[in-house]
Length: 276
Ligand SMILES: Nc1nc2c(ncn2[C@@H]2O[C@H](COP(=O)(O)OP(=O)(O)O)[C@@H](O)[C@H]2O)c(=O)[nH]1
Ligand SMILES: [Mg+2]
Image 1 (spheres, rainbow, N blue to C red):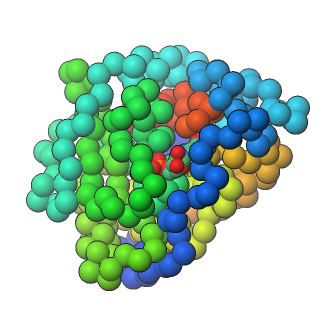
Image 2: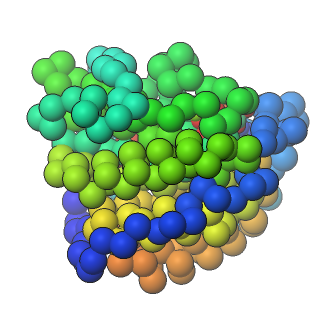
């Protein structure tokens, strides 16, 4: 609530190459939870204790990248603990639901952990399908939060998957770009980045798309349980440096783990903050 989105509308150029990358989106061999853990937070981490209050495996102080007001954290916890329901899938723009409440969209490379994060946020295991078959979903999925309806979460189709037919890539680009540019109720996009890899070229293309469309966005690191605390701190710092250079990016990053619950309370607060 303290940091306004840094919108800077400047033309609306559509990046042409998004999705034209091979080599992304294959399931990671080590994506199952590991017994014994690989450092960082593990499933022992209490889900609702802010990351910066949790001890790191190597004793260094971990951080999420932003301290949220405890009252905002609590309001966010409450609303996400309440009713959340799948509304509809929109394979084309004409199928979008009426823009009646604020929306927050989730974007990211296939297999980045988007479905898992949506499930963790809402504490519902089957809400968003998690799958090891990337690139199957080519729709915008809408979820209603709150009764009465308070806001909507939008699960955007993953990008960067290998073996996508050209037509599908083109269709994806039009759907996502038209949605991003034309959706007045879209308050923020959350762009998910794998903690192990940081921002890649394929991610920069969607960041550029968001910058051009002047959609306020925040970068969220996923799978933080898979990297050591020192490596997490490094990727967090590097990602923050890049975010600060991007016109529509929120300067603070949130590191999350759907497995251990790290950063989930903060991400809920970030969603609530975004819908303002
Ligand atoms: N260790 C770990 N694995 C995760 C995490 N989030 C997702 N995964 C795994 O990563 C794979 C892809 O996750 P999914 O949510 O389907 O990704 P999506 O394609 O972006 O929706 C699955 O095998 C998940 O179990 C996480 O926070 N920690
Ligand atoms: Mg998914």
